[in-house]
Length: 364
Image 1 (cartoon, rainbow, N blue to C red):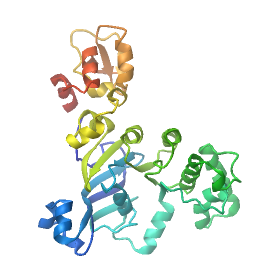
Image 2 (image 1 turned 120 degrees about the vertical axis):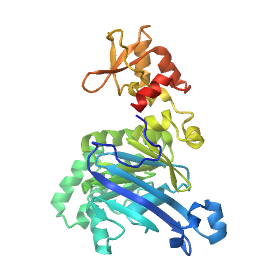
Image 3 (image 1 turned 90 degrees about the horizontal axis):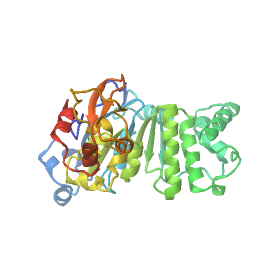
Image 4 (image 1 turned 135 degrees about the vertical axis):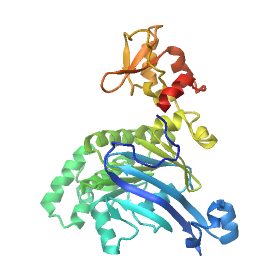
C-alpha cells in the first residue's frame, strides 16, 4: 500500500488533475535564478545564505492534486508551505519550475489571464478573515459575485444560500464587528464558496481560532467537502488538523517535501526521524485502518466476522475485545482480502515494528 514517501503523482483512478507542480523553486535574493540546477542547489539554507545571500523558500517540489481531493501542506513556521501556495496562484513568481492550475499554465500566464483565473477558478481563505467592515454579512459573501458583474438580486440570492450552508442564517444583516471569530471565518468560507471555485486554498485559515471553534470549523469543512467535492489545498502547522482533513498530506521542512502520502502512510510509515517526531503523540488507533495492518487472509477457514478495509483500529479493537478468534477484512466488493487478530492490532496501535506478514500485504 505504501508508496514512495516523496511520490507526488496522483493515485490512479482519482480523476483529472487540477493542480500540478513540477520542479518548483522559489529563491529570494540577488542572483536567485542561478541557484536551481547549479552546484548551489545542494547547499543548505544556512550555507546558501552565507555564500550568496539568498534564501531558499521552496526547493524542487513536484506533486499533482486530482479533482475533489483535500491536499494538506503542513510544516513548522518557515518551512515554505505558505510560499508554495502563493506560487501556485502566482501571488509570488516562481524562480524556476512549472505550475498548472485548472488546466492553465500559471507561470506563462499574462496579467489578464491571471486575474481571470483568480477571479473565476480559485478562492482563498486566510488566517485573517479580511472581511469588509463596512459591509454586512450578505454583502461580504456576495462581494466576489459583485466584482464579476452579477446583478444584485442574483448575487444576494446566492449569498443567502451560502450563508445557510455555513450555518449563519439569521445574521445576514450583521456586520463583522458584531460576530465572533468563528462566525467571521464562516463568512469568509461562504464568500469563497459563493463564486463556485474549482480550487479552494486555505492558508492557516483556522489557526487564529479558539480550540473549540477551530474543531467546529474543521467539522464544517469536512461536511461541506462531502457535499461539494471541491479540490482543496489546506495549509496548517497542526498535525491533528492535517490528519482530520487531508486525503493526502505533504510535510515540508526547509522548503522540501520530506514525505507525501495518505494519513495512514504518514503515521504508519514515517519517512524519517523528523516525521516520526511529528507523529509520535498521534493516536494511531484513530488514524490507521484494518486495511493498513491486516495480514494475509487465513486459508484454513472462512471468517465468521468481518470488517471493511477502511474501519479504524479503534472500532476493530471494540470487535476483537469480544472474541479470541481473528476476524476477516473485506474490500469494497465484499471479498475477504486479509485477517486481523488482537495481537496484530495492539502491536500497530503501540507503534511496535510491524509483523513481516503485514508488510507483505502492504507491498502487494
